[in-house]
Image (cartoon, rainbow, N blue to C red; front, top):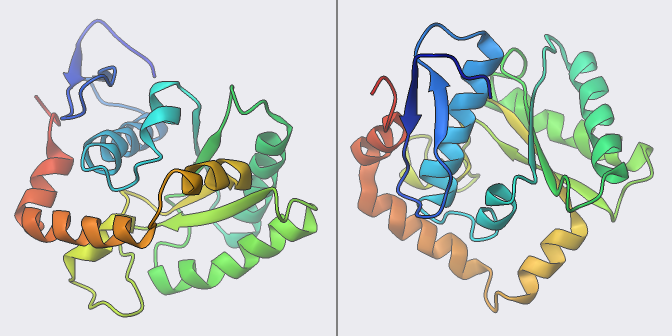
Length: 210
């Protein structure tokens, strides 16, 4: 993250997380997109404990964030393949997981959801099935059994369309310490319903422009 002489410090509700600094002057688009994604990770995903497995790799700086310049699906597939190859070749102590942010393509959630089959096929084509998998986040994420405005959709709502590249080994280790993974989803629904839409919006704006 670039710093200049005039900066602001984003402080989240997550004790132990290092502060995130964002330039107070106008930012290049990629810097702003990375900054918004970091705020979402710190304030929501980790801050609300929506994913109990996210905190450790994040505070150890093992989460790679890349903004794709893709403007169509073919370019996005190329970037996805590149990031899958990089993650597979990297030491997990250096890069455990990757967030591929693609703000210029697949803004429509239904198109994005359809693309996930292509993402899975890309994993298979690279011979990485069983080693890596792709999860998904989107500003308009909607679970199949939920209304569009249901607050529980926010468990998977991110500032920009984002593909989450995961190691299967990391998932296996995480599941070993959780007896009932369904309890995570149930707890998240309770947390978000207690927070409400106004609370969610305030959470994501925390520190912006301070």
